[in-house]
Length: 142
Image 1 (cartoon, helix red, strand yellow):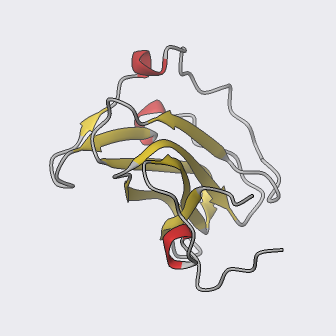
Image 2 (tube, rainbow, N blue to C red):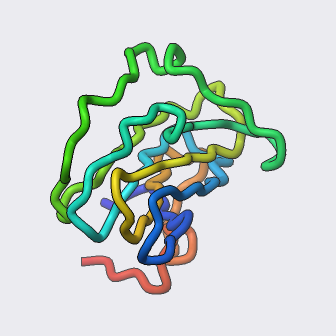
């Protein structure tokens, strides 16, 4: 059985960044899991305005997706001084049904680090079977 998803790296910052934004083209997918990673042990910015998920039909005019559309209260916890390098700093699980084609994420850390924003896009309308379709240079089927 093959995994039917595509992995996309949206953006990688310089080593001294505290905020990063990336947009993902989600055309043909029903679900996105967006990973906000950092290569240092640092926390997440607790300023809510630094964390934005927005959508656009044309990748130019973005509108914020309200937290109510997730059907959960989205609040950041009290300041966390550090989160282990081995853990994602934040993960957004987004049901793409009814959303616009492009999803943009803005993420901020509590201290400077190298930030990586990546997405695992799944439940495509068409099957993904080649390395290029799943976001890889090579594919090994074991």
